[in-house]
Length: 399
Image (tube, rainbow, N blue to C red; front, side, top):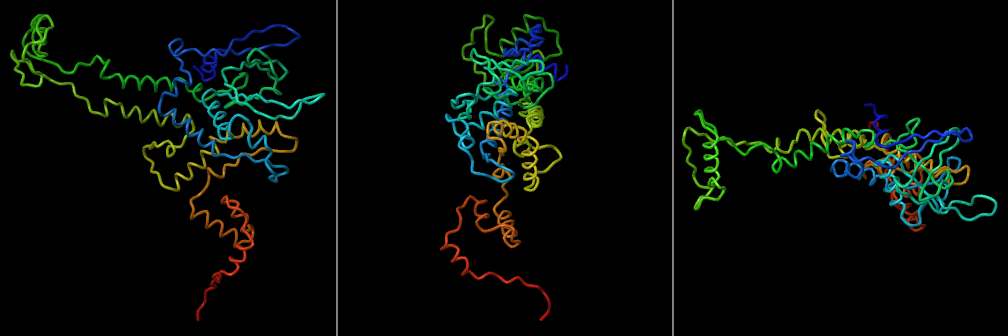
């Protein structure tokens, strides 16, 4: 089954074509089939996997560290209150986390935009409130923008903003990693549940009594009852201690069924599943605390993995947020996500870069301090710095 067919089954989309004003309307049902009903799992069920929870948590934690800024003509301007705190009921970090988790778990994120009253038209946006993705139904119209039904009303894009994790042509909803790779997540759940129930529900016996002699059913039951210290009626034999020495006759031999801890916990399967989920969710192995066979983690490799993660995984979500917020700001302004805190190098590397920028003359001390989150120098600090003797660079040569 193709990814698109799988996604169609997950979303439970139903198409109803009606001839009305030459419009064709497509509605997508919000009913998500249960795992038992169709073999598909919901995001809530997938999050019970530790590796999935950790992957979503990494994305959410990364998004919380991002700060928003506004540019006009490529120049950063003071951040408007709407961008500093888009939703009045939550912090910027909560807003970024809610939107990011929605995109990664359902493939969609919806915002309700609240506008100030204004005579003769739409007023400016004063509040942006995240909505639970399952509360919104997307309605597609041929040749016209989508509309949305939410809590009994139908709205257009001026009231509801729709963000998508991955846009699939012809589909109203976005495609998230859990929906796209639902079969892989279902297999991971099956492997986990099978390993967890091995001791309590497995049909594998604790041991085997064997003999080369011919034994009928009643005699075999007698030996079994004697081994467990029970009578034929299932009553415990008085004075029987299972820890004491056992005596076997008729050539009986006892062979215990022993498994290595690695086999019982299915460590190889779990390792493969963790790597597979990290790949699907776009998490570098170093951040996922998972080792890939044949590779070694060094500081430079981890730093490079972090850069790749921001550029080619997290940036898809951040760009969705940037574009959606830009449409809510005055024309000519552009909202940018500042990811510098995520790509921040170690202290020694940063200070060496600052020294190079200062010596090259393309950065001032106050710009360097702003980069480190420090206020501009005071006049007293400037005077103190001027009194500090600077080393004279050597040009080499012989005496």
